[in-house]
Length: 360
Ligand SMILES: *[C@@H]1O[C@H](CO)[C@@H](O)[C@H](O)[C@H]1NC(C)=O
Ligand SMILES: *[C@@H]1O[C@H](CO)[C@@H](O)[C@H](O)[C@H]1NC(C)=O
Ligand SMILES: *[C@@H]1O[C@H](CO)[C@@H](O)[C@H](O)[C@H]1NC(C)=O
Image (cartoon, rainbow, N blue to C red; front, top):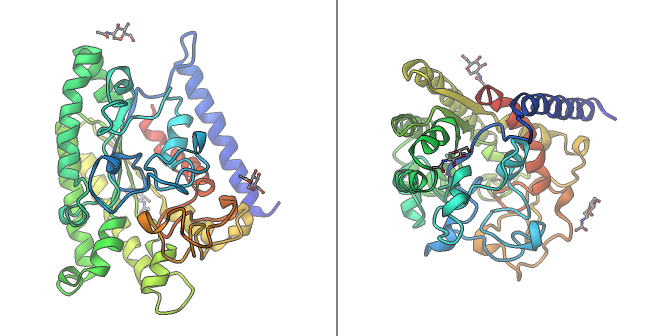
C-alpha cells in the first residue's frame, strides 16, 4: 500500500468509527438516523431528477446514465450510479433518499419526513444561469421549499415538522454551472466581468441565499466548495487550448471563490445566531484523486467514461454515443462534467468529515 492509500483507509476507518459512536449515542432500541433529514439545493452535482419534469436540454433520465444504479435505472442523476449525496444519506442512516420535489408520486406523505431535493441540473447562484437552460433557479427552489414546509406540517404535525426543519441539514451545491455553462461561454459575462468579479457576485448571491434559508428555519447548512473546475474533462477540451492538462487559470478562480465562500460563511455564522455552516471542501480530495489516480484504484483521469469522454454530458451522453466505456470503476469522471460513482464514494467520506460539526 502506498502512503496515500493508507491514509485514505485510515480516514475511512475513523469515519466509520466516529459515525458508529454517534449512532450508538443516538440509539434508543433501534438505530436512529443522526439527523431527521436533508434538504438539497443547487445543481447537477446533487440533483436526483427534478429536470425530468421540465422542458430543458439538461437531462440525464436515459441510459447510459444510471446503468450502475439500483435496477440499472436512469433517474435524472448525472452519474452512472450513486451521487456523493446518496452515499451521505446512507452514511447518516436515513431510511430513504429525500425525494425530488417535482415528482408528485414520490414527494408526498411519509417520504417528506426525510427532507426533499430541490436541486436542478444547470442551476447556480447566478439567477440567469438557470434561466438560460430553463431549469430551476435558487429563488424558485426556495419557493418550492416553502410549499414543502406546508405539506410537511400536514404530514407530520406542527411540532414534528418544526423539529425536522430545525434539525435537518441544508445542503447547497452551486457555482460550477455558473462558470462552466455560463460565464466562460457567455460574452455578456466574460467581456463585462473578470472571473474574480463574477465570483464576488456569486458569493453575494450565496450570502443572500443562506440568509433566506435561515429566515425559513434552517440552522445547519452544508455548502460545497467549487471542484477544480479546470480539471473537468469538458473544461480541458473547451478551454485547455489543446493541452491535455487541467486549466490552471480556472482552478485559480475556483480557489479564489472557495476562499471567499469560507470567509463569507464565517461571517454569516457570526451574524446569525444559532446557525452552523460547514464548508464541504470537494476541491481538495478531487484534486488529489486527479493528481494520483493510481493510489486510489483509478486509471483514467483525462477522459470520462461516457462517449469520447472529452465533452459529452446531458443529451450528448446517450445510448448512441460511440466509445462509452464498459466499466466505469477505473474512471474518475462519468461524463464531461460529473464524477463517477467510484469517485463519489470517496468524496462522500471526505465530505462527511467536513460535516461532522453539523451532526452533534
Ligand atoms: C410526531 O412524531 C412522533 C415520534 O416520532 C410520533 O409518535 C407522532 O405520531 C408524530 N406526530 C404526528 C402528528 O404525526
Ligand atoms: C475556513 O475558515 C476557518 C475559520 O477561519 C479556517 O480555520 C479554515 O482554515 C478556513 N478554510 C479554508 C479552506 O480556507
Ligand atoms: C468493474 O470492475 C470492477 C473492478 O475491476 C469489478 O469489481 C466490477 O464488478 C466491474 N463491474 C462490472 C459491471 O463489470
